[in-house]
Image (cartoon, rainbow, N blue to C red; front, side, top):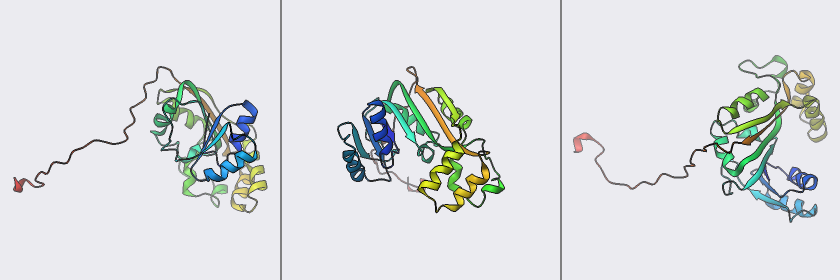
Amino acid sequence: MLDLGCGRATSSIFLHREFGVQVWATDLWFSAGENGQRIRDAGVEDSVFPVHADARSLPFSDEFFDVIVSLDSFSYYGTDDLYLNYLARFVKPGGAIGIAGAGFMQEIDSFVPKHLRDWWTNDLWCLHSAPWWRRHWERTKMMDIEIADTMPDGCQLWLDWHRLIAPDNEAEIQALEADRGEYLGYVRLVGRRRASAMLPSQILSVPTQYVKKPLLRSEL
């Protein structure tokens, strides 16, 4: 299993303990060394492996994983129209890709609701609703979507997390309290790679050979 954007690898440790799977705990923002120590302290170093990597430049071979999960990170890179084309090659045909994280109960297309404006920043446009994510994946013709919905009480869970982990973030807490699940919640999406799906070839470089030629017609 690939735990993509694993943060401090606590989700990776949990996944191994709950399901007995091997997990590659991969993140860009958090140190693989620190995660490795956390994994050893949890006594699961034989089954959870810390990796420092960018989600757009993963160091794995094609069809290496049975399952890919991404918790609270996919919106940072997965909205790219080409990203699923890239990521799907790392999971075996029939393998699952699942994401879960902060999102919208309904799309915010142009005007930010008044009660969210004090909290809103331009990076929040990466958040989307479950129907948006379903459409985003389905149009690639690579995935059979099994789940695309919002988690029950997602807004309240988001608020509870903030009060516990980041109580100083008053702007976000106030936005969640005012919203009450009208726009803000937790979205989840699960799909399986179609065995018949034709994945585009990955272009890593274009081989060229320089030949000196005139740049202007007058030089001919």
